[in-house]
Length: 73
Image (cartoon, rainbow, N blue to C red; front, side, top):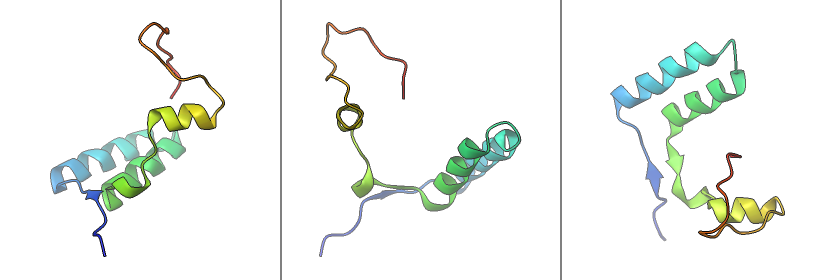
């Protein structure tokens, strides 16, 4: 059985993410929630979706070097 790949933040990074979450809680609670979850759980690399896959899922054409950069995340 293959071990799960996960990015885990060190205690100082966790505290910085949580401080940002507290600062954003009133203005953007969704981002605050994501930051808090990142601090506590890290990032499961087995569940990460590539930027190109996200674009395809949204029905957008693939980017190439000649295409203008999009500012949509």
